[in-house]
Length: 133
Image 1 (spheres, rainbow, N blue to C red):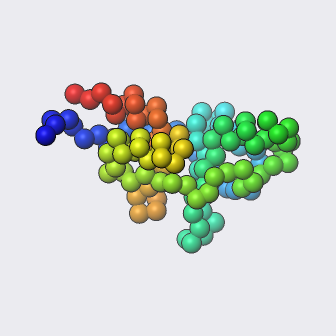
Image 2 (cartoon, rainbow, N blue to C red):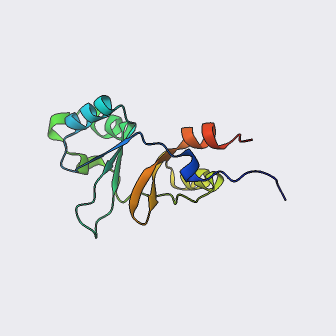
Image 3 (cartoon, rainbow, N blue to C red):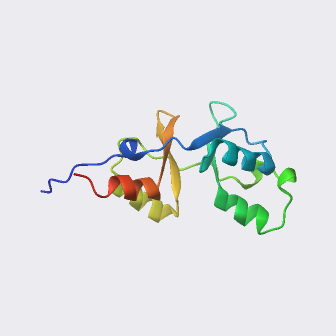
């Protein structure tokens, strides 16, 4: 058996995200990315039966910029990914990396009982989770 310390998603998660409404325009979303210096926008649930959405800069590049769409005329809900695949705070980062690979993810929210605690991505998994003492 290995003496490796288990590193969990909660140990490496970051707080570099902002919560927004799905009706926010992409122009305003870009402003939020810049002003708050975040790498992820999570889209709030509209009600208790709804799910969170996620928006990355790569989504904007692929679905707005590359398609020559006007950022002031596109709303987040049109291009976001929803529902998000969340990560349990107790998940071992090794399984988190496998989950990302299996589903083509780069970032996911860390969810505990339906509430966002933070976000985890490959950067945190590798830089903070791979080599531990």
